[in-house]
Image (cartoon, rainbow, N blue to C red; front, side, top):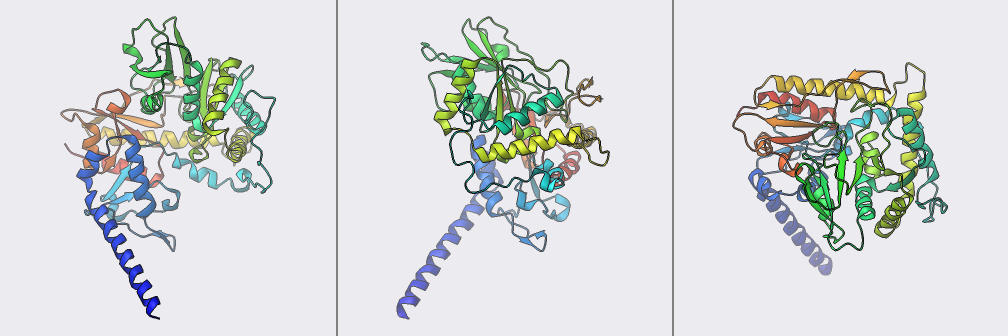
Length: 457
């Protein structure tokens, strides 16, 4: 008995110490500390993952208990699936809205309606082997995914697939790294320059230089690149962060182009004829269907040798790509194509649903911005979509918001008003701009658009 009491006392002592450390940690990370400490995207993600995982409450009879995150009792409206039904207190005034990253949770409601149509059941004996199709250049690419991707591009008309080699990756981020690896000379005396027109995707510089490779280096804004040296130019169209349609800028004779078409889908932009026919085109399920957690992207590559080198990079990096994720992605993409081919008026297609949602959100954010002189948004010229027949301007996945007047640091200004965004400096642009995700859940978007017009300088 004495031994048991001794163990129990020690257990309680350790537990008390751990809880005291936790309380100190929460109180220490007040809003001013967060603003100065979270200087990089990586650190920001890590911090929010910590808060989102531990302090957003537990489900209780369909409600989520309030979570007191900081000494100022600030509640973070998290973007994890288990807090989808968060009850917003006091009209949302105390809620910190995290619109920094493009977590596409707005698509959840559509996919909940599909039930068995998108359910994948995998037996324990399936998908054991590393290999999928040894005759293919990309030997870990599942044939089901090839069929589903090819069909969807044909239905939408947003890429040429004939005569292309398909390479699958763990999201388009891995494919980007594989592409610059494949395109950079391995015997050159200097690293290959990698450029993109500002504002460019904020992760391009980080991914290019992360391993400090001697093969390639980030060379900045394509508008400012004037060296007579080989280069790789990244063209993201529609562009992340500002939603504009893009073409190559440098146009030098020593350049190689990579087209990132992650957002070239009819809920974001009019699809134009003829379909894109570039040397390397990158796509991802993250932004096409909203399944970011599956981590599946694909590249359509003209040159067989480039496709082989990209495959080699992924083989060395991760020894292939999850078969389970590929099969799930194939099922989802098949469901999207089926919804487009379905003539049943009662069964709304995925792209119709997504377009209407994006149109509604852009109307709402423009109305919010029009109520104040503090902010502005870019305008987009309407074009006719060859897929839907609609005529409309871009409905980007991100809003490129500008702070007008005397506000020089828009990110910090909005942070003081409990709206977390990603500042222009991360995209090679002015700090008067921020990127705001348009892909969050309805509850977050409602609070955001209600708060924005109430902000004063």
